[in-house]
Length: 308
Length: 236
Image: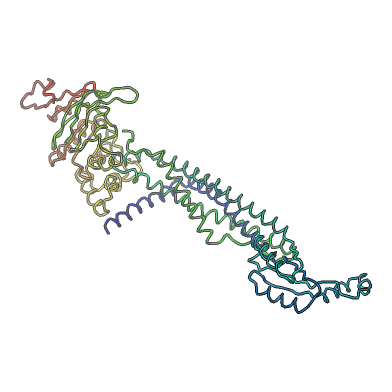
């Protein structure tokens, strides 16, 4: 118990002294945290962008349909039975039946075609099913699987699926995600460098104090502890700042996006970053700040030999 | 308490600070380390405090050979020594209390105990009641006494002082010396490096004189040999 309370008190001491130093060096702290917050905001913003783009494609899946042509001769019972079977499949949201007769009617209503169709004795059109995939089953692989399954049915003649645009869009999203990761890695390294340099300067300015602490028997761990707290705090605050920046950007952009979406007849509004992403940003900031401080302090603080 | 066995120290720049130095300070003794500037006094203290390692020979402090001490144990080792510096090395942006408490804080002492011992140490150097003052508000003599309080607050068995009276006038210097003698009377081994010969003579204690990195060890006993104070005496 005693050792636990000692542990708490010495970490509390380190934490309080780091907060005190941060507060005293107001401008330097503000600049460092600002740079780090901006660096973290970019990947977080990209992540929010990708998330919103995926939400938007989820909406587009309503426009995505698979057209299934059944074998001739047309038979409405077969069409309805098949439609029912498909509706029960996972990944299928809706199946619409257009019978050969309905299709013929539709053609007939088109100007100029009516008289030409009158000369036909037989209806040459097949029954058609329009299959709309469920919103959670619109990836290219899932669509391909559905298409293959439908094509394999003996009553089906052919399946038409216009998914090229979806493939392109998904490829674009995938690319964006890779850009996101590269950006995150580069800017994460940037955050480590900024923290490292800030901590290095702080260690230099407090070298007299560090020497005295080492002379009176302060261990290397004791000397490093407040700097590790400082770096970690920098990172955490930068994470919060990044989240606030992206949220502010989202609020600023949203009216424009809503207007654009409504011009396309869609109702869409930007989402995020969520509170969970705030947590991720803070954790990433913490970790990067700690790494930067650990690297700087292990290089700057010698094991045992301050100048006398 | 301190034993140097044929210690040599050569700095990386080639300067040989100590050569084949041997001397011993037994437990409970108070001794002076004298010699001109550059004679190697500071190097001796640095070797004791493990700020430097000897090039050859052995330094034994409190029955521990410093040569075999791994780097991670150095901090623990230093807690057995109190060190007083000529320029007192106080943290000028912290109050007196925090300065004196530092050796206890690094040793994970409880707050209650820190409070009690810091007051006791300040009382011993006659500065009780000035805990909240900034060192800059104190006189030079008082600053030096804060430095001494910091050195003794953790009750180390060994007290080292590097020119502790260098910046003080004769009266203040005598006061500081009296403080050291009082600690010595309660069993602390004290080693004071100084070039102030008058101070050494007035105290009448053992003197380890270093010249060009070698010891001319002698015991000064003015009562027995009042005239031959400067004559070379027993080498170790």
